[in-house]
Image 1: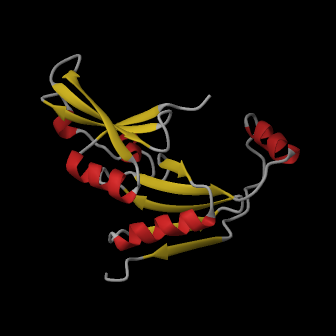
Image 2: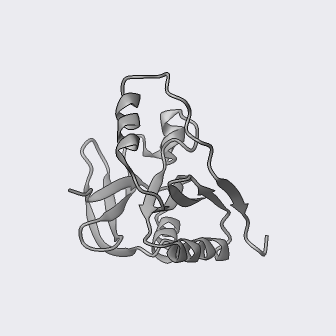
Amino acid sequence: MSYHHLALAARDIGETHRFYEELMGFELVKVEIGEVPGGGWAKHFFYRMENDAAFIAFWELHDVPGAGAMETNLSKAAGLPDHINHIAFGVCSMAELAERKQRWLGAGLKVMEIDHNWCHSIYTRDPNDNLVEFCLTTGTFDRTDRERALAALTRDDLPFSAAPAAIDFHTPADR
């Protein structure tokens, strides 16, 4: 089983559309428009990621009580450090990860790159101020990994994981 879609409120649907279609490479394929229980109405935009089984969706809210003061950054809304809640999308190769990094940089976005020792990731911010990530799994998981993960469910005395192998910050060339 996989997830079908993640739905988030958008600050500016035009900027959100540009980011997710042009820079992320997802295709807008559907909109639902209707009343919102409790008042107001909304447009719900669905972006296909790879196929018709996985989407990211955004709400454009109209006259919805409380929407004027909404915080679209997931971590800020929860009162957590900014990196805790983020959205990660998978890629299939280092070449694809490098291409996506260049696309972001070419659009004037700052990019953070981390080799986590078992996966390699790039991060930037979307127009809603959420941290978004493209991630490639580079390692494998064995029985020891599973045993440690199971132990961490009930123990707080396990040693910290190894620090990332590398953390790099990339800025657009014209900035």
